[in-house]
Amino acid sequence: MKEESTNRRIASLSLDLDNQWSYMKTHGDPGWKTFPSYLDWSVPRILEFLKKRDQKITFFIVGQDAAQDCNADAMRAISEDKHEIGNHSFHHEPWLHTYSEEEMEKELELAEQAIVGATGQMPRGFRGPGFSLSDITLRTLSRRGYKYDATVFPNLLNPLARAYFFATSSLTAEEKEQRKELFGTWRDALRPVKPFQWVIDDQDLMELPVTTMPLFKTPIHLSYILFASRYSRTLAMMYFRLGLLMCRITGTAPSLLLHPLDFIGCDDVGELAFFPGMDMLAADKMSIVSQVLDILEEHFEPVTVGEHIDALDPPFRRLELEASRG
Image (cartoon, rainbow, N blue to C red; front, side, top):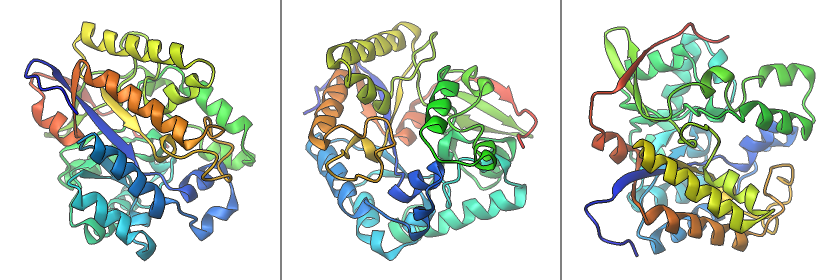
């Protein structure tokens, strides 16, 4: 039960609803083409967890999953529980930044059609798969009337995470080249941690970065806390508390990221053993996620990303678009 307080600042919670096939696709496992899924049982688990906490969050949904009949009940349940729904692309390709303008337009259109058809909600926010972002993406989002993007991940450990992923994969040299900006680049790492506005021709698009520790720019979202807790849960929680302390000191309202694998363990899915933290039991993971959210609620009131955007006060830092990647 949340503590009632009008003095606490807000924080936002979102979940990138990456499915089993999308992790396998990024990892180079050809088995992804049959679209293996865990959404039918993992989404009810996540929704029940959130319901017990009386917590609404933002689900960034992949259009390919929304388009499949086998996921209809899971998609409907997210909407019926009154969670915000965002767009996480249609094909979930972390090389989205290489798309042409025509390809990007089609990608967003397909995802929107599938998401609206499955949930009844038109997404007003977007997050790129693998934190993939380009000028073309931002211009297309602006043209299609999106209110915000939430892709930027200012994380100085991006290259290390990518190197670890490549080392544990069976990707070809060509596939590694295609994924060379997975998890973001050094340029992304140097972007602001606080919200800012992209200046797109004569319009602005709000950007809410995934929060990393202010000043140090190291990750504080759940997947990293879970990974650290494998070595010491106490130290992992101390690190998370430090991250929130830095947010309070710098006046940063955190936007924290969740994934389905934060609720899924090795006792659920063996095919994803390559992913960090997938040697943990589901019950242990959920216990840690619950503790992290308890700590968050000591100082912040968690809301959806859309609510976070609506509560922001100008003026904001404004960034001109750079040359598109690819």
